[in-house]
Image (tube, rainbow, N blue to C red; front, top):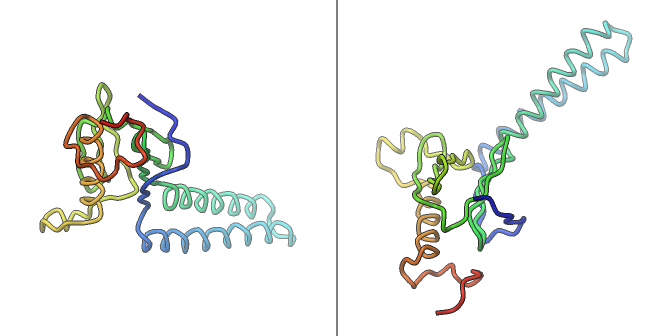
Length: 168
């Protein structure tokens, strides 16, 4: 079930700084190529070809922004928000049935619905093979602990300060 989590998150995970830097460089290069295409069209060159070059490069820059910097996982008092390039899904803590770190991202099981994969924090395949703990594993631990606390799990949950549950 989807709920409105707003933009206030207790914790947020985004792609790594290195990935955002790489995508930023890609965005910059293709934005400059798009501007060069527009300049070529305005400078008396082949207008059709120049505008096509500009359009294709601008499209690549927008896709790089959407895929490289837009994804996130956000935890709030009501649930976990998964923002992927093409859609945003909010899963209430009570509906989280499981969580796993995979090479595609953090997979969150949902009650009565298909699991959702959060692209923001993938686990590198080599780390999975070598059994290394990564940032994705830490996200999984946080989500699992928080979901368990909301589902009537252990009462020593350190994240219940901002919850809407009545005090026990």
